[in-house]
Amino acid sequence: MSRIYPHDFRKTLKNTASLSRLVLCLGIVAGLSTLAAVAYAQRPPAPTLGSGPFTYHTFGADFRVVVVTKGLVHPWGMAFLPDGSILVTERPGRLRIIRNGVLDPTPISGVPPVYPTGLSGLLDVALDPNFARNHYVYLSYNKPVHPGPHYVPISVRVPAAVVGAKGPGNAMTDAIARGVWNGHALTKVHDIFVDDNVQDDSIGTVNMSSGLRIVFGRDGKLYMGTGAPNAPANSGKYAHARGGRAQDPSSDGGKVLRLNPDGTIPRDNPFVGKPGYRPEIYTMGHRNILGLAVDPSTGVIWEDENGPQDDDKLIMLEPGANYGWPIVGVGYDYSGDHIGGPTALGDPSAVNPGYLEGYLPGIEQPFLIWVPAIAPSGLAFYTGDQFPKWKGNIFVGSLKYRHLERLVLNARGGLIQREHLLEDLKQRIRDVRQGPDGDLYILTDEDQGALLRIEPVKAQ
View (cartoon, helix red, strand yellow):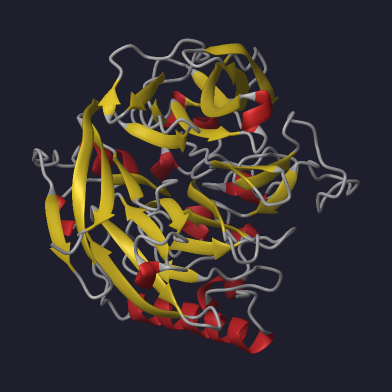
């Protein structure tokens, strides 16, 4: 079933985006929130998760949630090994393994040093498509770096509203490491790709976050989403703009990158040979990508990303496309100005008046804009047999509203239903994956994080 939309449907999406902006302007989504760092610091602790199981009866399925294990510290990503074990990353820098439903108390060795501050650290994990032969495991992480004596701190160039409590002067960038799994540890671990998305804590540790989802496409290539929610462009008219790096073709920040499994650049990437563009760029104009998945029916890569206080998006990626951050969007930035407005960008001369329309020429529209923002995270397409009514559905975790969202599409690929699941558990959901058994697996982003399994309720 193809989900590549005809031209008339794309016009509908643009009109929907404009309508969403109108709704915001009318004040149905009320008020201005505080800065991201303050909101994060004041986030209330999650209620203690019970031992389960928890049973639900919904329109699409009767299911129970089983608590596979607790004791994870801000888990971020997971991968299923052929023997049924599950690798789980913890943001502070540990790789864990769950065997037969039991969390091994000893972290796996071989993980490279990470920048474990704020929202940064060890992030995603993926297995090579040829894992049975080569045993390669890939880790995405925020890598500590020393920018050098001529580096200009981000706080010097961005609007004052971006700058939070300054840190001790540390910096990081984004990296993918690859190692060989020997059944107990990672060996021969080395970086296969390190980007140039250097950020520093002069704007605060939370404001320098960069989510790094990785996924292998049906083409065998490795796709990596990077964040640039606040970092300015390296040069040009967005050199003083919050998030301007996402519009900078000479930078990897705020992009989806496409790599060969060894970290080299595919020759058929959309910007290969184009002056001023880094050849690894697949798409650009992204704020902070926290979900990345392959549509199994088409092979198209989808992502979800966090906006500022508005403009969370679900996007069906097109090679070479620009998705607009920070020059256009729906709703308001933390500055109180419209996304793409002069205050948010910090440079009125850089603003195209069309930002108030919700789209600009040359900017692709998302598949879905969440109003209000839900802080989307992990992303998965369901293809299993455990839940027949869920086949072809999209599942997205919500960090802000602490639920799992189910998106139902019709035969044309249009969105016809949305359902919120697990709201009563009140857990920040960081990742969602379909397991080899056809069940759904959930990671909760908490100090005492958990792995949950969604399984059908069998008839008695």
